[in-house]
Amino acid sequence: MNGRFPLPEEEKKVEGSPLRIKDIAHIAFYTLGALFAAAATISLIVSLTVISAEAIAGTILTISLIGLGTLAGLKLWELATPHLPECLRRVANIIQILVTEVLGILSLIALFPVDLTKSDPKTRDEINPEETPILMIHGFLGSSNNWVYHKSRLKAAGYQNVFSINLGNPLISIDEYARRVDAKVKEIQELTGRKDIRLLTHSMGGLVARQWRYTMAQDTDVKEIVTLGTPLDGTYVAYGTLGLSSCGKEMFPGSDFVKQQQEWAAHDQTTDYYHIATKTDLIILPMDSAKRGGSPGDKLKVDTLDATGHVGYLFSDKAADLVIDYFKAKDRHPGPVSAV
Image (cartoon, rainbow, N blue to C red; front, side, top):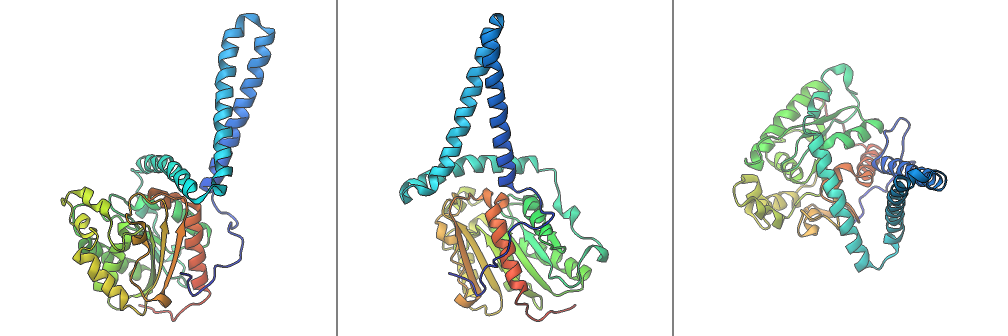
């Protein structure tokens, strides 16, 4: 379903924007290719001119050729995948996701010591008083560091009032997480002097945002709630928590918690929702759960990615583009601004 506002026809990159994941991958790809090609050339010359070094040169040549062959295969894979029949493309995308999800998890492990809340605006000099604050809410087993990439993209797009939160203990209820969000929102309101807010969420964070919206937001003007891979209708993967986690049980498909949120959303005529799903999410099962928010059609926008994993949302150029485009479109059609 398309939203009320078309995506802007503007250049995606903005001046001063950080290197994108795709940019870094391409730089690494071509750098490795150049190194392998140089090593192969040098080793071939050495093997032909220096007899005593023939064995070593031959080994380097073999390794270089294997490396070049692997890179060529990856490039052919990238070029061929979009042109495959739907069934084969789906298989190719899943294989790709299995690899990139592992890399994404390793990236999150490397980011474990980072507390992104420490870089939140702390003084009035660091905020834009004319800008609706954005609060980013992570998912199950996550933390504020999950938003490192999206925060850099939002900052590069010109957004100053970007905040994050650490939800903490993965065994407590979503309602308790919502209370922590409520405390954070009050801090943001005190700092910015504004009563409006935008929520950018990943996975379970979308359910936390909705719980806060419908039970604690009170007179806060919740402009938009953006969800990346949120189990709005539950997920069968939640059974993997074995009932040991309160929030895990609440994410069971058809749970009373999920049904209540869907009912609240169905009668919500004020909050705009933007649900981003992916065809290759191995955590949100069924995948359509990430799109079934229950909101009225005129308050809802939905997009579906082809080849992004559940962790991949956090490092996805496409997801970041969609989020920023959505916010920019909303900025072109602002509603009334509320002040504290």
